[in-house]
Length: 60
Image 1: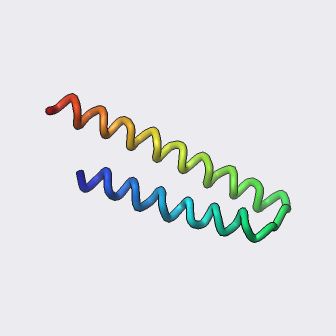
Image 2: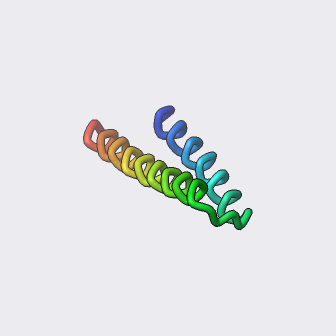
């Protein structure tokens, strides 16, 4: 369960950074690449959360 909480906290932090950068309105190439990386990171964390939930359910 601790791992799941860590994933959720990490996702929240990354989402906060993504939202801040999105709201700042900078529309240049380097920031777009960074935004894409953050979005990919969030997707990876979502996938890992789902894997962990499935694993925990299988163990019970």
